[in-house]
Length: 109
Length: 122
Image (cartoon, rainbow over all chains, first blue to last red; front, side, top):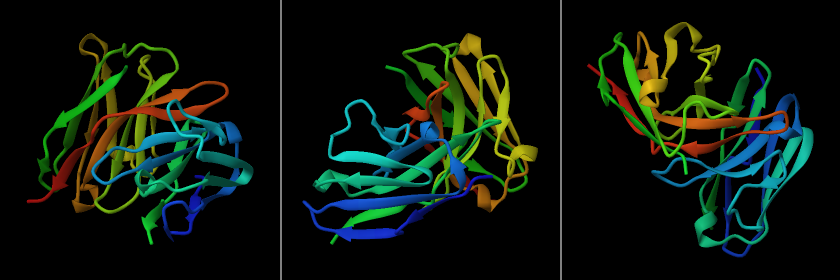
């Protein structure tokens, strides 16, 4: 099983600041099969990025994804109030099998 | 726009079987490229994939839950279901149904139900 480790666990930032979230895999992951979601309290997760760097429909260009192999990054260029949430990375592998990272909480400083 | 809605018992006794159903609207369960999926989230914790089913009824389960999980599909009712046997308090969670879009290039969850809280308690 591929383990995804997200860091930091919590990111305290102010609106307008840049957020950089990390997702590290225990073994190489196909970039095609790496996605990012955010989740607000009481809501289901929402897809932000798929294929490591492609924005989902309706997602602001403030969100960007990058990375390959075992290291992936989600960047939020300028935090808006609605961006404060928990962020998860997710990988899909053969079998199929898939796993989520433990999450990064982006909170208002 | 595909919509998913979970339903089922919100309270299950330890050692019994948790049963949930996900009703699909705005689309067909036979839609190509989709795996119909159950995911759970214990209170205050992260997401865990439980398993997925293709409309052909091929199933794929999380190895850690495989011995206790059955996912099935009912095409006539446009729904798919989850059964989790021998539950314990550790199975208390919000359970989501979702669609996993898969292709040769990408795989991601693009539709989610609102989630339903299942509590395991006597």
